[in-house]
Length: 321
Image 1 (cartoon, rainbow, N blue to C red):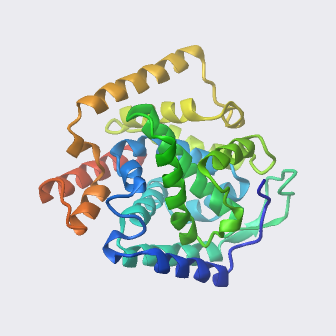
Image 2 (image 1 turned 45 degrees about the vertical axis):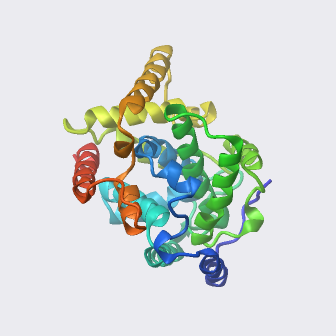
């Protein structure tokens, strides 16, 4: 359905940012706001459980993997890349309009500067061909993996979303794609069309899991410490369980019956834990801060600082050597 397109130009990026400014009615709310389906889904702390899965799916796109290895990994440690990626995601989802636009401009500048040559050839990306991190389809693939991962883990643990909610979430997500300069012309028209497109991507020649992607995955497997080993192991298991078999095969990962049983057992345990967790504790620190900013606080301010410090410690423990 979608083909490899040219890079997002500065002119196109500026047009999409202008559309965002036209649509936002309250700058405190940023892109979405307290009554959006986006905040309902992405505000749940459980969404972070699918973060390794999302990154793994992103790196199945050759341009994303090349950019990560050729540039990002030469400038940042694994923990810095992981923290930077999801710090930006949460800032874009829950920041004020001013914060969103600042993060967006910074990301666009960085992507614009990342250009190189493909060193792992495929039928779609021949060896030696040029690439840019501002490739429009590559950017949309990153956006798509975050959306698909969030909905799947939410429905696995918190419960199903209605078709109307998923359509609304997809409609809202166009603003997130605008942040990267992505034009509506490459977006499937509905949530169901999006799922069809996503499934087709998994077996298309636009994705290829090569040595670059596998080397990025190996970082997660080799970065455990005593503090974060348990959490990381569970997130790696979730990533394996959520992967399409074709992608899992590309990463050369086994998923034996015992692992499959462990995965389903883990999901059952997480569902039970979710049900007994007080609602106020289910939300991420970013969501709490955003609700405070919008004049709808859910808990005492100390909750935000405590949850943020605990979450930061967990991430550092998981990805420090």
